[in-house]
Image (cartoon, rainbow, N blue to C red; front, side):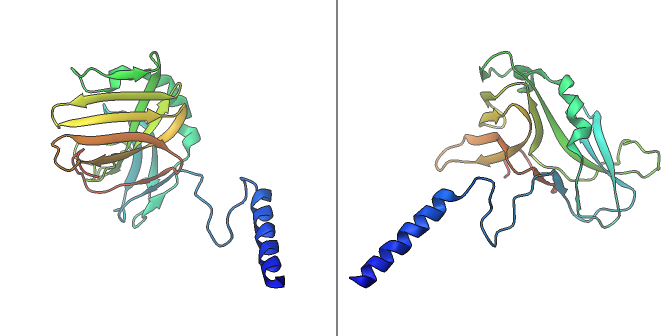
Length: 206
């Protein structure tokens, strides 16, 4: 009986301790989740820059990367004003595609990371200087929480974008259901602001 009471008392203490924990505390022995922006990439060559660009190739932000460097910590404050470039969310889907938006009237912006080698040392990206590195994740901005869904014929893909209000990393996930020819892709705001650049792959690749 004494042994049973002791076990019950220990269980009660454990439950009490769990109830007293706060959301700001981390579990002992586990590293905290990163809170800043980090971009990872293969070892950079000399005279390399990391740029955040629009789909038309306009640079919103850039920073130099040292030779041999494999990651960088860009400052998101320096592209915050780019929210003024946000456009009607429906204009971001491929041309000729009908999208379902909820709610309507939201403005959004999708930016992507580019690495390039400044071969002529003029401080700006010229033709042929881009490195074969990319990520399908996006730096995203939305004027309000937004859900966009649409389907394309080429590639045969159903997409759902779920963006939170403000700036976030929109994480790319794609898969092909068993027995189907239609890929399923999502682009969702994620908590961790970590991007990994890799060699160019098609949109159907994870």
